[in-house]
Image 1 (tube, rainbow, N blue to C red):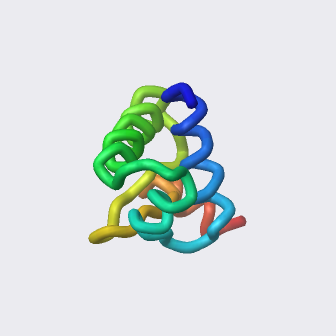
Image 2 (image 1 turned 90 degrees about the vertical axis):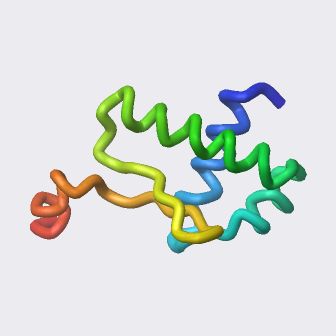
Length: 79
């Protein structure tokens, strides 16, 4: 699978999970080494920063989660 498709797959899985998902689980789902998942998540994080997205990918120990960037919190709170 190409890099962009892998990043999109990770993004979709993390988004759909609705809660932090472990590096181990992402590795199982995508059938990739953990080191490759980390590299892909780093690239995905860079993508969010480059396009000035309203969300970001964060790593909490060995878990990943999508969340709102701080500068948009007030708007999300109102929603």
